[in-house]
Length: 192
Image (cartoon, one colour):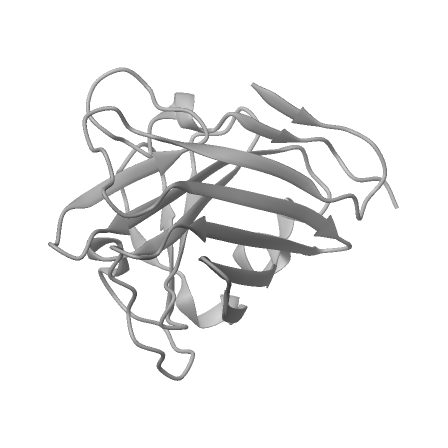
């Protein structure tokens, strides 16, 4: 478990691990930096080694479905100890999606109307950086100053269409970003 203490906005960096059953021939590493600024959460994914990675073409920022079928960065957010959570998907195309779940993989509903994240993508030598900033209170008013549990993940598509699954922590078995063990990052309560 990773716990973030201290004053915000401190940036915290984390390296994602490729699931051993889904090796990547393209990506070398995926790093994520995360920081909370007031009611907003800012996340930046850096995917290194793009020579054999299929990267979606840029599009106007907009909500889209099934982004996880291609290269996509994901984040899952819930109140510490809660069962309900949100799944956030951000694609290098600039498209995004948000879903609300009542419990593990149950009750999925699109939560796209309220989120409207700021997504930016840029290529740097040998890597791609995807940044997203979203207001937590647009997902749930309870998220603004509460203790949060977060799962960080990415799906990387190699040029042959093979998918690899990257996460901060992988529970036993096949890749499963929704599993409760994946919510390994803890953000402590923010007191203003």
